[in-house]
Length: 316
Image (cartoon, rainbow, N blue to C red; front, side, top):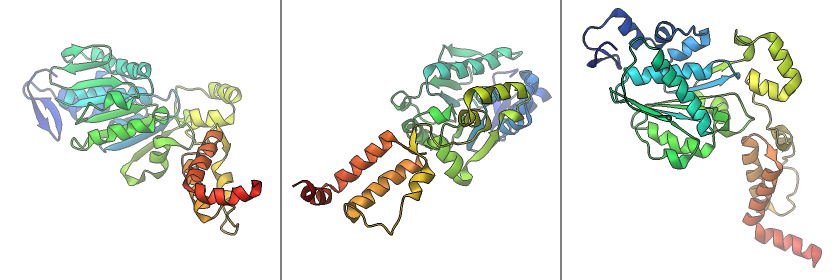
């Protein structure tokens, strides 16, 4: 950070001339950068995240555990030490994206020698080395114009629409960019849950409960459990994926009703279609009243002929 000219060491940009040992350490070790340059004392799990070198990371963390702080450090470090990089910050709303972006810019301002920003506004900045950090709301329409993303951070990922994830993942293909999903759970549904439970070995997973955060007191957690109830408390503070709160039936209850020994009321085709539709809803975390209605409508549409042949004699 002491000169404008850079070279690359192990994929990380470091100053070409006038390099101090401290500069080199910070470039190669984001955890040391956080502690020494920014004055942050990372928790053990945060140290692991800062030194993460994979491509897919999912953080299932309690509220107020420090996940936003530590991922904002990664974003700032990437922009400084990877010239020409593009980092996108995505959240369910523009306000939330802006909050995460403010943390990133706050880190830059804390540095003894802040990098020069040639473009700077409330939603993005561009450094003199060509790196950009852009904050965006959860809308696939506004994000599709970006490509060759080096780092994509999705905040409150359990609340981000699945359509957005489908829109952004191709942006990582050519750049071999890194994807970070962070959130507390919101039911057994959506891409955050699917990545955590069924994403396979491509994902590095970190789970942090509120009891592992030294800044959250047991007294506060006792008060929260009493105020929120077990379902919300376990979701918000213990990282547990509970059945969705708007489900008319739990996934286990729906699965228990399926039997090969019962003769289908409207024939095999309609019954199979209905079973498939309901199974899809179960896989997404439960069966709400709306999901039941939608599944039945789809099944009836697929097997309307058979349903009509059976139902018509009943009323004719």
